[in-house]
Structures are given as structure tokens and as C-alpha cells.
Image 1 (tube, helix red, strand yellow):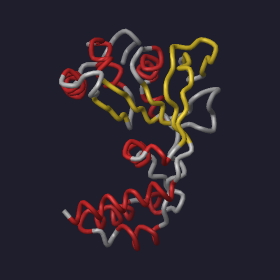
Image 2 (tube, helix red, strand yellow):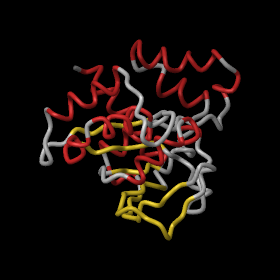
Image 3 (cartoon, helix red, strand yellow):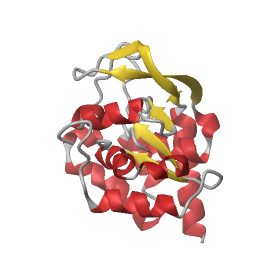
Image 4 (tube, one colour):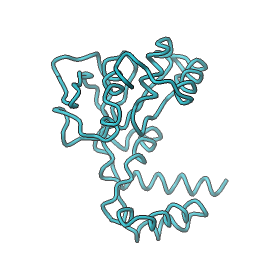
Length: 204
């Protein structure tokens, strides 16, 4: 976005708006943003009427710097959009965890590779880059989906939605209603859920 009041049009924005209008406050559309929040912010700027019909989950993982600031790549990717989310009335989940979701090559070879063509592909994809093979390589976004399936995997708390400046520092005294902050996800149980769901998918 070029500024906080200039939304960016795209097919993704159109999809969010159209799907949100098929939802309702009692049956909302859940939108998971695992990159920059450009489409999420643009959709509510272009059509504020969808706000009661959506629930936004934004992967803004930077727990070590909360509540002072964010240093997250997704936030940095479009600071204006992240500011819009924080300052809007949209029901917002600030997903602030996932760094701990790691797995060694041995683990994915033993537990993931045997799970059909998908599991084999996902394990072997790690050979595409040395960094992917590190036991410290995070599978960050796995956490967002796992939490949606089983919220007990992480800790959730209701916190004030702070103002964020252009350098991604938070002003916790100048707030905009409440949001849900998710943190401290359980990596082992997250992987267990993933393997269980993939196994069930193969069974079908």
C-alpha cells in the first residue's frame, strides 16, 4: 500500500470481499495472512461493510520484541497495511508465535516422508537449500493453521490493539479496542496434529 488510506487492488482482495459477503457475523469468514497483510487491509478499506463478517489471523511473529515493537518480515513487508489492521475495528488475531516449530532431517525422514507422495515431497523439498536442512529451520506458518484447528496448542490472550509507527514500534498507550494475541505454541503437539491430519487425509 502506498499509504494507510490507499488500498491496493488485486484478485486476492476481490476474493476476500466476495467470500466475506457470503458470510455473516454468526458464520464469519476466517482469513489467514501468512505474508504481508496488504490484501487483508485493502479489503476492509475498499469495503468496510465486510468487517463484521470476517475474522483476520495475521502471522506477525515477533514474541521476543513484544510489546515494544515488531521486527517481523510480514509486518515489514507492508507497514501501512499492518497499521490499518491494528487501527481498524476488524476482529484481529495477532499470531505471535511459531519460531519454535522446527524439525530435524531425521524426524521428517522418519515421520513425514513415509506419508504418501505429499509427505515424501515435503521432506525431499528440504534438500533444495542447505538452510532448509538445518534442525533450527522454522516451519512458522504451520502454527497458524494448527491453532485454528486446535486452539489449545497455544496461549491466547485479549490485549489492547496498539498503534504502530513507521519503524514498527508500538504505542501501548494509544490503543484501538482489543485483539487476540496468540503466543507460546507447543511445537511437539503441532507436529503431532500435522502428522495425524495428513495420515487421515491419506486414509480417505
